[in-house]
Amino acid sequence: MFGREAGSGRRVVRGDQGRTTSAPLYSPEERLRRDLSPWTLVQGILAPLQFVVFLVSLALVLRFLATGEGYQAAVISIVVKTLVLYTIMVTGAIWEKAVFGVYLFARPFFWEDVFSMAVLALHTAYLLALATGSLDPTGLMLLALAAYAAYVINAAQFVLKLRAARREAPAVAGVALTGMPPAGGLR
Image 1 (spheres, one colour):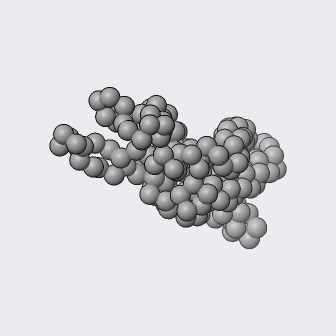
Image 2 (cartoon, helix red, strand yellow; image 1 turned 45 degrees about the vertical axis):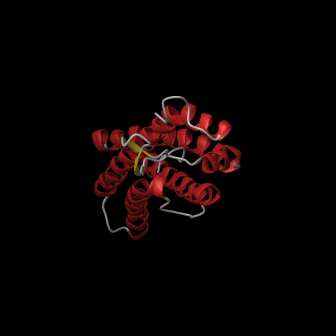
Image 3 (cartoon, one colour; image 1 turned 90 degrees about the vertical axis):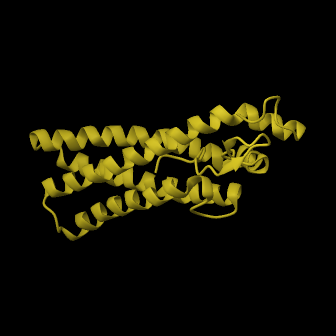
């Protein structure tokens, strides 16, 4: 999982002039809870940290697959990446509870959380295969690459949500401050 900043489980609603529009990613109350939650900062720190750990680990895994060297460093990096993933998943669930009232599968993050479960499963499968010796080193590295591919997809989901939340922020802020949408409605 990449981090939790915004979601796109947008509901389609009818505007006052009959236009179909998307409901905002956050209600004004959810946005306020998000902005006041210390877990928002935690997610903001862990998400880029996890990405850096991923890049280093990916380089080590690819180095091992290309040269056969650095197996132990690659294994350690994958375990560290997985521990960071578990940390961001737990703190993300706490963040989701603080903002939306549920630990997982809040409307704006439903599909990201679903895919995050696949990411967690693949990383956990790696740890289990490592612990049981059920895969050879190359098999372990290929499993790690599958977990990393899923992580990249999940990270992209969250980046797209972050961009969507930032695009709507001025419109939602106007509603929160005045109780009325800005002239021309929410955009």
